[in-house]
Image 1 (cartoon, rainbow, N blue to C red):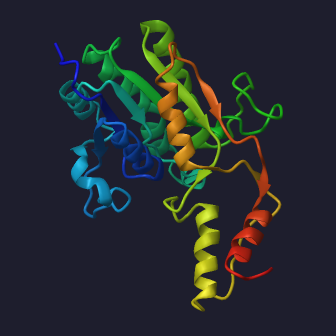
Image 2 (cartoon, rainbow, N blue to C red):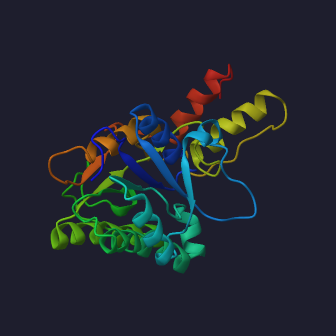
Length: 272
């Protein structure tokens, strides 16, 4: 029997990403013992967690490998799991649809099965990072937890599979597993290929004289942008509820890419 004074254990997949790094900081501040799963690769990709690296307990694993997931979960016996790992680029999902489905869709199934095989269906609470890409061709505005889904990319379809897998395991096995349907959330740690970072990096390069222009697509595209720090707190809050429920996580405000550009350049003393 575990001691009452032992810290709660959390396991994070995708710990080296934007959300994983902020969530790690948040949980460490709350006194958690934080474990993370890292994929083996030839280059280090830990820059977002280097400042807390020594405080984390990291394990090599992959959502493509069910045996390693079973071993990690049986060993760690986490109280909470945050499944943030995915192939999360919409454009890339069209180029690599099979890989996207195996990681983003089936990876969630493998994780849930690993929890079951470890006998932790009643002990472990699971947060699944879902996405507003589920809504795709929007059926109503604003979107809510009851809005019909209509994904329009292999990424969205893979996330839809993961979403309903979580619901099924919750209803079939009584597991405390929830979906957080996240709208866009940004930070300085956002990947460089996402539009917000593309803009802010270009502004910095233009101000320094390294770059003289910024090429973007549809400037009048509207997005609901929040901050990643706020969103990871909501992830944690969802696992502290009395009963498991799925929630849409958003700010409720929309801003255009054009507006984002204007604000970013104005902040640097440039007007466009």
